Amino acid sequence: MVDHGSANQIDSIPADRGPTNYIFRSGQPLLIQKKSGWKILENQVYGELSESYLGVPMRSGDQVIGVLAIQDYEKR
Image 1: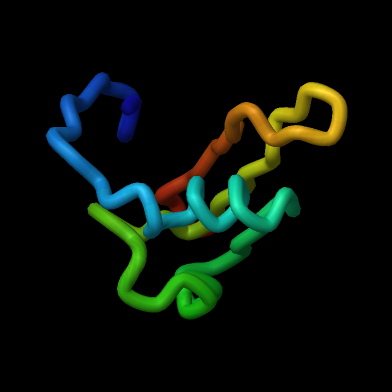
Image 2: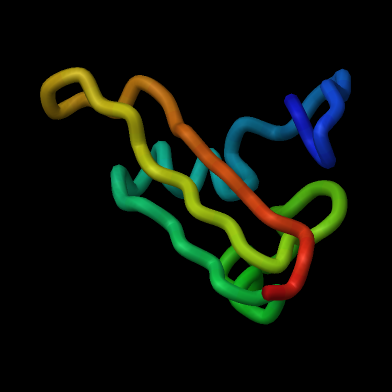
């Protein structure tokens, strides 16, 4: 995972938690525009909360095959 501009090794994140899983399961994009927006994923986020986040499902036909996400830690 790349975070704050550097690659980080993540030992393990439970597959049933976090924004990537939320997008993967729902098949819907997730837009969070300020830190308070993370409440939708209460107790499912690892690391520092970003000020903004956009995650979208990557599809092959009707199947979600991955998630592309970007985030910003600075308040704009």
